[in-house]
Image (cartoon, rainbow, N blue to C red; front, side, top):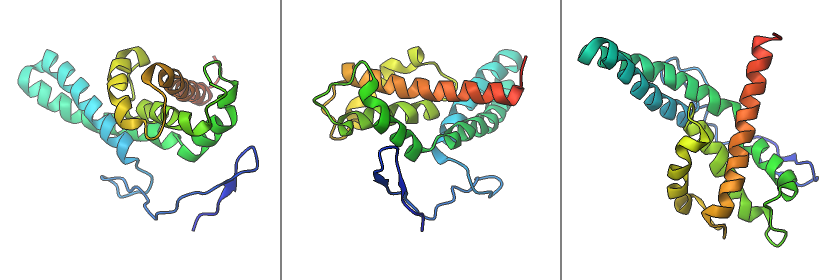
Length: 181
């Protein structure tokens, strides 16, 4: 059983231990993230089909779609696995009051769904920019807001903050992987 940990304020944060290793559907290796793999696979399939169709007609579209699904699934899984929901939640709990949009009369629990929606959407919509998906996110907010009293206008800023935090972490990791210059 996973042990709880403390966040930056000394609060105990439980860590779920459901025994699910998120096994990779192809290799069986632990660590595949179902949300990221599925979203990446769909995105990759669409992109591959478009490119393949333009180059090779219907057969090219089928081949491109299949290859894009495999590549996109790997990319989406990789992004989703880089995100640790417990760490993201702890970060925003510790930092939300410093954000210019934070209403001092509202607790973190009102912002939590917006932050979660932002980082989960970033993983789910790998390869897309905020401005490309903002309308879709706005339409989905009502189903994802939980007990939050925030309307989209206010939640949007928190969701975008979480989205951008993930983007910055990805860029930082790429820079580290690619080395200087």
